[in-house]
Image (cartoon, rainbow, N blue to C red; front, side, top):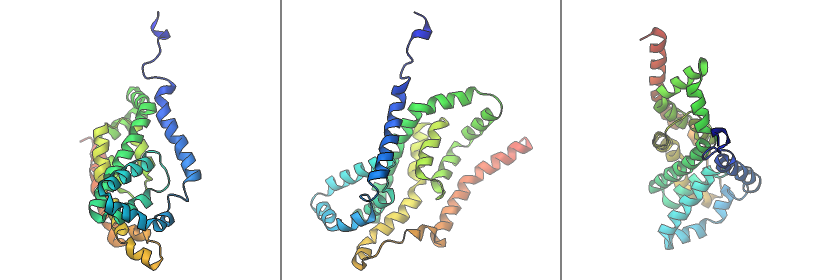
Length: 244
């Protein structure tokens, strides 16, 4: 039997099934869960959630993390509400730890699905290519740490985009996990602290001010971190042009 008649190991449709399943669930979730995974739902069920937390703390933590992982892994609506809930239920700390851990786990699952389905082949083709594509891939490889931190820190980069792009350019899983966990801490800390103050917001019958992340005293430090992450990229580009 020739090599051409042998099925590819882990190949074909099987490799793409996890990412296809994620895409299907994401679409269905966007169509059906938008009203359910909302701030209003959190407000209506706050007393029951607090009662369950007080009587079953460990179980509440596990259920919360599992739900948050599913929201991120399947790109479902409600990630911001889940982050607020983490602060509301568990205070700023350890709420931010639960939020960041769950978000990192969910992001890692979608990263693995994307890399297994298309990322490995695409990265290999980029490595084997010539010309501009190969130079772009080499540039990404030279600045992976900086690029990964940057896309996590910049508020304008959608979370699902930051989850998928690294899978398509051959980023190692461990590097992706480390930069995701550390890179999302600033934003998660802001929203978790907002969530920790939801008790007073609920009492007034108001909604939380999520625009706080765009306040200068919050945004400027985040931009400062972005500048630090981007600086090595800029320096490498300048040195490359000078032939250093």
